[in-house]
View 1: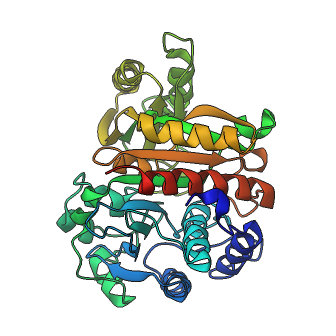
View 2: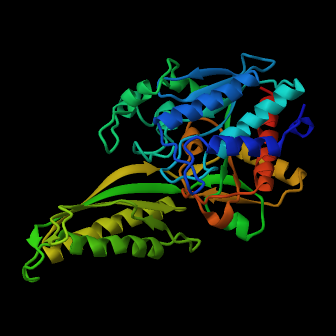
View 3: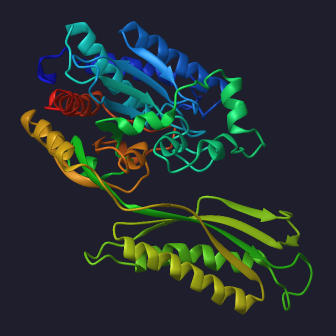
Length: 418
């Protein structure tokens, strides 16, 4: 049995995407389904109904990860998992994460409709808190399952309003009893996702086979000076904002100037800025901001962090303030499994799709899974590379192409010799 014989339906997948988008739907056509909210619970319940309708058995672990199982001819074999996430950004779109979950569901529906079996069992996973929008850092469900975080530290995390992760998980009724670490025994993991960039669309391609993930390093920066009245003389001020501003600008400069041997520059982002006391007529005494550095070359990424610390020390000395740069989160350069990559390549070629190999510069649950489990990602284009935005959009044809490659690679893996 191969996926080419299955009644895979791009239309059914599309209809499911549109139905899920109504859960937490926003006036501008996106979705606000942040993790561990009431609408997250509603989306989970809808997925449960769909999964059980096609014969899947659901278990939920202590972090709220949803794991649907479809038995194989040999229940003793390690399962092959497909997954992604249903949670969104506050102004999220219809497809980020959701495409991967519902494409996996469509594979299960097609198998059920055909009455077909795979040799190994198949799993469909909805990971908890991939986005990190409400509780930071991102990818907590997969990270804790793979041993990057402890369960205790995840359950103790608080959002900006002070709500506790574990308490919210219990409140919405989605804390189970299964051990998340059991997912380390999967034989393979496959994830379909929108690209969140423009490479595929610009090249007129409809599938990306992802070979590796770029290294990432996040920092938190605190600049501290002294409050001063807005009418006081400029001379002698220890203005934290005026010190933070050139340091924030330096993030982009450092990223563009730090090159890999191939000549590729890095990527730098400041996504959060907090000012104290945040008054119109007070020169601030404290500024906090986040820094997100990414690079294809781990050595170049390390140089970016060193350059940020050096620039902070230089600015702090010149402006008589303190500037503290603290590492917050790190994800190493992560290769994906060569056998799974080849299966995705073979599928895209056999189906006559237009495809290319590429890295992911964005963190996904697959990146954490790859530390313990053979993993591959498949990308579909998204219009204008737009994501984390209510206007995020793809076409049915792109979704169907990704679905086909996902199904081919997953079923070939589940039917491969043990």
